[in-house]
Image (cartoon, helix red, strand yellow):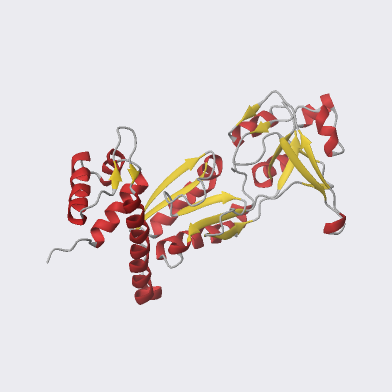
Length: 315
């Protein structure tokens, strides 16, 4: 009796959905687009229903295809969970890991750590994609997303990796020429370097007083102005070092410049919202050996002084 559905079909359909098109799936699997189309056609023929609406630009799943995908993810996750449970601690990480991180932070921290990780676990294949913004909540294109701030989607698991405090800085040359802001309100008189990233309201810096009980603290939202804006934190940092204005940046990003005197920390009685680092992954990956292995490795690395104190172009 011919089976209507096989584990190979389930894995193929998940990969196809993640790729977003037949041609993209073909590139990722190292086969021809015709081979991908033929495999999909055979699946649909056996089931007697269409799973995909094909268009010239991008494919979309039919309602039956959406149901198929949901079950495929659950079944493949259960199979992996069963393998992990049976093998336990003896299981060596292996297989594909799709990882996302923001541009600067991914380049400076995640990419080097993945290099070290794959030396230890050569049977793991890692695809790292760097992006300006984190992928939308519920996006299944990645197994792990390293992001700043706890994600809003409660369906995902967010594991704390490291604290990330933001500080306000400027160069001594800028402060000598334009003066030093003493309160957040003073920033309205200064040239502030803007960074367009994530879902945060652009051009709005928030501060709370550092002392006192939480209920006694006051929050201020300051609309900044300036003639320089970028979506890259490293570029913004270089502008601040060149004396172009005031910058709100992760402390890791600026620590060595504060130590060397190239930058000066401002508004120390005030706190800006933290942007702690989290590893975010779907519930079905809870038992995945390779997902857990990479997250454990990254978390352990950030506990080492040379990593946590390193100057980075974070975010």
